[in-house]
Length: 281
Image 1 (cartoon, rainbow, N blue to C red):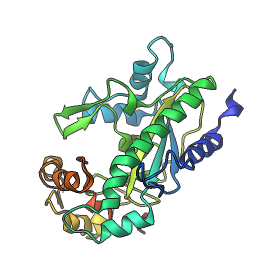
Image 2: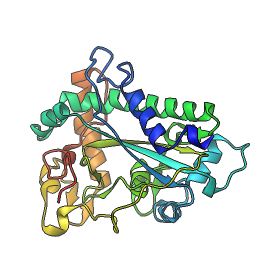
Image 3: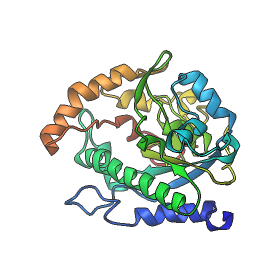
């Protein structure tokens, strides 16, 4: 069965799902794609980084094995039997252009991508998990499990049971920036999705040696600090509580007035910066 779904076949399936205009669109009345062509990475379920993430973020943060067992408690597997498949969905050039021109309140396209684009991401998670499971590789999308939700990390404050950014880091897709966004080969203006599958896939090599290897802050870059309207980013790092307060008190009410429903839309640190659409060199 292994030759039915290798990394290439799974990547083709992800891209195929995203070519469906009923999936990848900016809204029910807008056929414009929400996302550009994805990046795909893989890590093994027994990668020591996942244990390190749990130790650093909090005991509530799932390892791949814990996420898998939450979806398939009846299946006896070991962490080494699992693969974590992660994708990065880049914002389109049009969305980045519109958002780059904004300074305090988000662009309409960015908010649509945050809302309808994430709904598309959910459909991608569900379709991929179902396709692999139907093919004989039981698969869960951690972010779609009933137990998924927010928790409070003693060290980092607001956190979740499964971080797709951290899974992307483990899967060779990029490293963290000063604002805690992940800088990929297609830049930082991306969103992530992931599944955990009982399948034997090779891990994507990690071409970096440190958590912030792609960030230019060590060379004096402060672009994301200057772009943040909330003042939530400094040379010391990212103030998550301050960021969330700005979204809750300023951008969500604005978007609700514009679109008719609230959206946790911001993302100024992801555009108008050297790492917006590429890994800076």
